[in-house]
Image 1 (cartoon, helix red, strand yellow):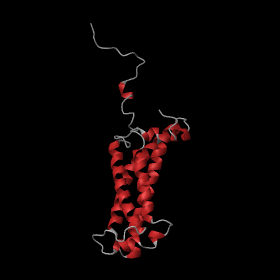
Image 2 (cartoon, rainbow, N blue to C red; image 1 turned 45 degrees about the horizontal axis):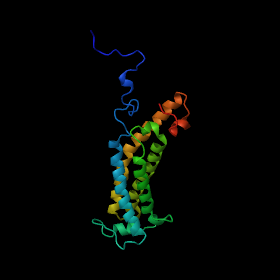
Image 3 (cartoon, rainbow, N blue to C red; image 1 turned 90 degrees about the horizontal axis):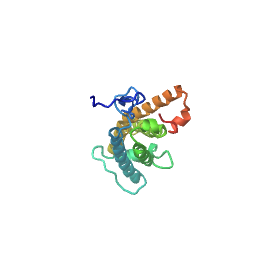
Image 4 (cartoon, helix red, strand yellow; image 1 turned 90 degrees about the vertical axis):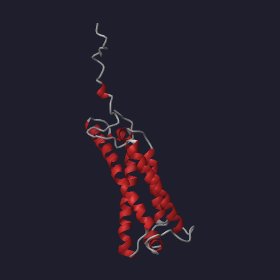
Length: 196
């Protein structure tokens, strides 16, 4: 007598239930915690650095830590570029890093599919911050002939976050496109109201 269980024909193969968190054609999940937690940690580190620099710009601290470039940090942080807006640029950076950290941890492992809106917001938070950091680093020697150590560290943090964030945004955009081609409302899929 055969003791093996016979599967009913209506039961789908197990492979259809596996890797629901993995985007089609991808080898790894861009929304996995191993991808997102390092970004959140980097963002929190960036938030601490930018907050410290903003407190100096607001006059809470009379000096700023600078181990390599003498008066470079004071020159950069007190420059006209740093004060173009009503609040110091470091305060904007701190807000950007905070937004990066929050949007990095919202949602589960399938958020590229279940919450495309938060993934896109995450990408919009990470991308422009990285671009702004690169521009500010270029301006340091060009306009002011000075360097700021913590500004450089902050810029490096911003750049390191771009790649993993871009992966997740790409997965969400691909998913939105596939759903649109299948006739689903892009708007509803974007807000997670249609999930497959």
